[in-house]
Image (cartoon, one colour):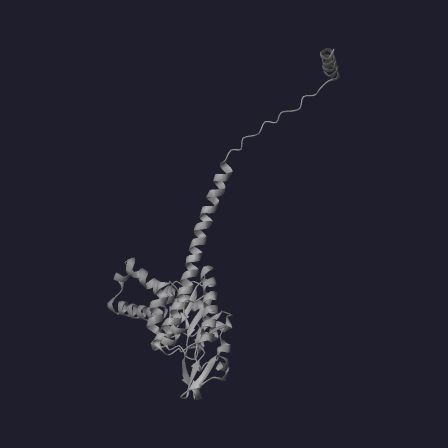
Length: 278
């Protein structure tokens, strides 16, 4: 469950859509009304879809998998870079390189090339290069850092992808769909929500709107990571308790066997009782 209420979304301007002439008919179920030629998004449905997205994100983070965030538009770049870096997830805020997901092996090669240049600076190879080669390697490193620096830790394809503005990021959306990667996205009134697995109807142009939605998503991921950390601690403590229980010594209970009564003893007892009666 997200911790965002109706008033917070209203203050952030999440309800403002695009002009009526730019709308996508597939967004009709999420539009509350039209006001002065601008569509108003139904915030009750925004909250419902945001809760679903947060619950799914929490489960993904709890399983230890990565979520890739994509936002190359000017309003969202800095917000995504700041918020997502705090939860240690990969993100793309510069140009989306075609084939970043569908041709992931080539992407990994570029990342390895970047780490190879870093290694040259530490093992002394850098000093053997001439001035022109150093300049070329430096520029190459800067270019690779700009495009792939934020996904260095992404050693395999992400378990999900979160997109701000699916019209601008249509290439990343198509690649994710082709690989059957679950998609989460902020969907404005000019977009088609049917293209996304977990659409969140919201204003994807305003900085405050992007911030409040992203904070809710990042908060859910943080909760999932904390739950995963707590379960690991519990699992480590469990074997220790079982070993301690097995080391406890159980003292055997002595069982006294019943004494067999012979016929001679029985007759002697009967005679003794008769003598007492006499």
